[in-house]
Image 1 (cartoon, one colour):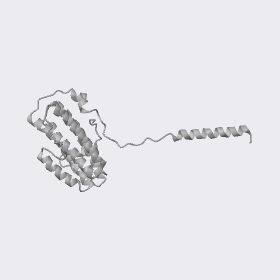
Image 2 (cartoon, one colour):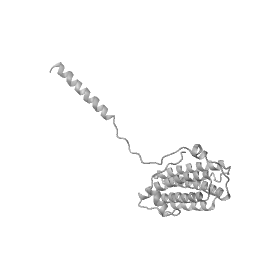
Image 3 (cartoon, rainbow, N blue to C red):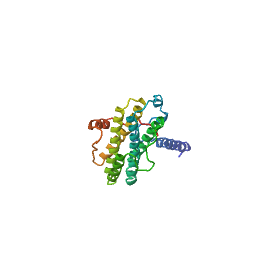
Image 4 (cartoon, helix red, strand yellow):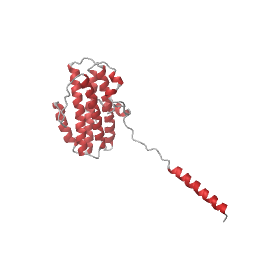
Length: 228
């Protein structure tokens, strides 16, 4: 066997190894689950900060206080349910969404110098109706994973309805801006929870928003929400 033949063979082997190495470095992009697009934090949102501060009437103030407690309600409920159903990380995601909504409300409380109504203790509310609902929904949600998801969906359903009603009771542009941001959060939560419930063969039936509104929410894509 000639020396030139051996050298040629070695060169061919080296080329093949190099080619294989290059091919091995290529990878197929992973397909991520679609998530809600995130905007800037509401406190630094130029669109919100450009809106003028206006006088509040008693109804507008009451709505602000109620919606702040509803955000805490969703946070406390989903956090507690996740503690009992750790195989449902979606509940943790929903509690994170509620935390964002609470921060959005804090901006309004500060802007209008309204004392924060929420208790610092988990599961405790100043609104008697919310307190009773929390106790009942937590007890129901502990029964099974599907029940936990249904109670979470009910909280988002209630919040969406109350936000829509609050928008109809004010002409303050800054409040309407804030409420629409929170509505996007509630609608995203309903989309995700509806999908998760489908995995259990359960169809959520809205108790607060209309069936038509719910159908439109499910038929539309995830929305941009404020950042943490």
